[in-house]
Length: 288
Image (cartoon, rainbow, N blue to C red; front, side):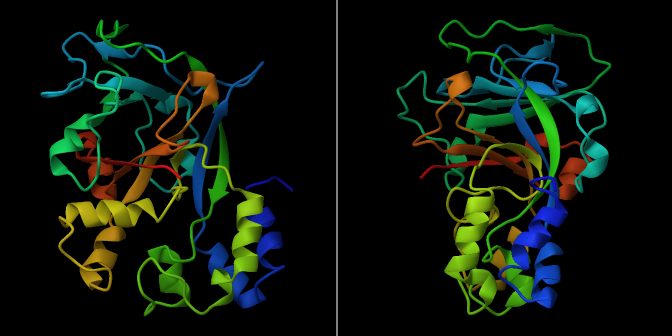
């Protein structure tokens, strides 16, 4: 039984939930692509670090007034098992992820979802397959991260019981982002889920593996300017408008440490993804 498969999750849930509740919980799983450090003969689908391949006319992303972003990762869309996902990723070309990581100011300026003025501190670019590209040297003041090749594995992904999609299935009237009276919120079940898959990891699509509260809520709050309370239905509605594009965990092999062993997240609305409006993707990060 493959770890991360629907059958593996079914076996786990049946140890803690009734058959009816187990099937309902399995219904909110989403397929994602786990990105792992490639070794040996693994098929390489992308990499952490190194230097990006950019069209000549594309400028290196920069946060005005602060400086250039660091290059985090490159993903070859044509090598991803996109047909297995439930988001509309490009079938070809590359996705390039950039982030102002604090190299230039010793972490003084933070990129935060709740700070609109900092949104320019993270970017995702899609370079079409037919564009002529060349590897671009990093700005002199930046030290590129070491290259770490990545391979891909399709898996099912779970999320927190207080995530809006799970709450809607079991307790639609429960407060957003909080536990409620149901076995899916029991400590026994939560501990079993954590033991089954407690690693954040690198991922394309699927549910985000949030370090703290669901990152979709964090993005929804930011988009709504933090002006709605958690019991406002507009926040729940906005939370449901965002899906994970990519997450990148801290990674020793690439000398990447996001805060205190945290992770970077890029989310996007499905309609913007379908229109390839990656400039509308939202960024946040979390750490323990």
